[in-house]
Image 1 (tube, rainbow, N blue to C red):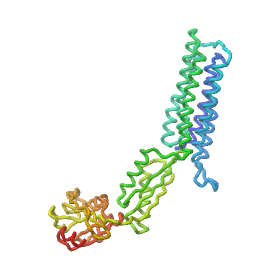
Image 2: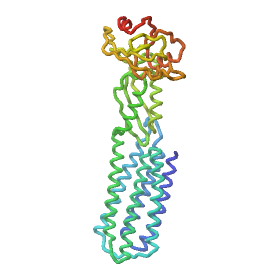
Image 3: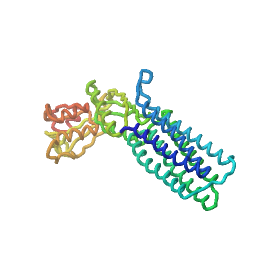
Image 4: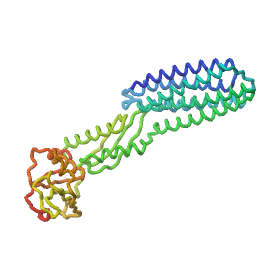
Length: 387
């Protein structure tokens, strides 16, 4: 999405609003309309700032090898400063400027309505574009236009009251000050959170954790952190892997990175710290022909599986359970489905009576770092004795 184009659109919209409000302010002498015109003028300057920020944000150089992504957030903070300045100027005029009588005609009310409809429509599309591009500058600009809709409504009420000989010009200007100051505070806090490297939101981090833990080759996820810079996100994580082979470990981390990028939009960089698992315990999986403990001749056809948690040091069994095979009834690729199911159960070693060389399950087990061993034991008790 071309976010720079929206920066140009914002400049054009502000020019139109300035022209409308300047004409009404000159003809009516209304303080509220003048305040809204000043509001538009400040927004024009900030729209130009947004455009500059969008243009420079993705550039990288020797001095800034990670890019200038946070420039968009700097623009957001500057925008907040402009909003506070506008609120100050309007408030000062509303409280201390000499009293004056505003003149109101019907065409002025119509012009104010047009000045409210334009930012209302534009903010809808700009906000949608900003969220799609995850651009804080566009989102901040769209929110500011929403404030224009409200403040222009206040201007309309002030002019209408003046038309009915009930002056509310100063009150309307002060209400505009409060609305503008609230928007400025929201923009300032949002921008400063990113500039101070605040964490990604809890929902996004949880989503990333779920993606990582769904990878069978991951033995333990130690931590996940993330931050935003402009519209982009940076993620860093540390984990232990079941695989010890360097090439397989690299393939696993690349697969995890690709899955994170598919699940979470606008990821600029994923930094994965991976180390091999220290095996203090081993989890064995044995296919069973029946619940009594007869070892099955086939992996995919086995109605049950025994899962054993064994201490690596002395072979002592800490936990033993027998679970039903949920993929036995499948017509195709049941061996592969069972292999994927066992890796999801974090099996370290699969003991089988049949040879799986060259078959699909071997590749599934190999990618997940699961060892396959052939045994001659006929019963589970024999397997346990040999362990």
